[in-house]
Length: 113
Image 1 (cartoon, rainbow, N blue to C red):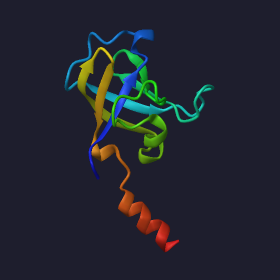
Image 2: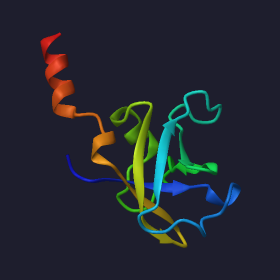
Image 3: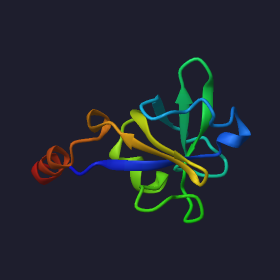
Image 4: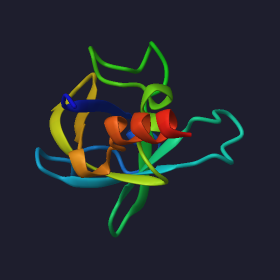
C-alpha cells in the first residue's frame, strides 16, 4: 500500500501547533459519537489529549492528503501517525503502515464468505 498522508486541522481551538515538529508522534482515534461528523477522527497527543482532527473537508484537506472520510474504513478504532510537515496552511502527517488494515487480506476474507 502506498504511503498515506492526512491533514491535521483545528489545532488553533486546542493548544495551537507551536509544539508540533517533524517526527512528533500522534494518535488518531475514531469519534463515532461526534454530532457534526460521523466519520470524525480526533488527533491525540500524549500528555495533552485532543489537539485537533483529521481534516474532512475540501476546504481543509491539503493537496493529496486523505480526508477523514477516506481514511475511516482503512484503520481500526485508532491509528498511529507522525508529523511530516508543519506549514501555515496546515500540518501534514503520515499514517504508520502498521495502523492500516491490510486490504488484500480483507479482500480474501470477503471473497471466501
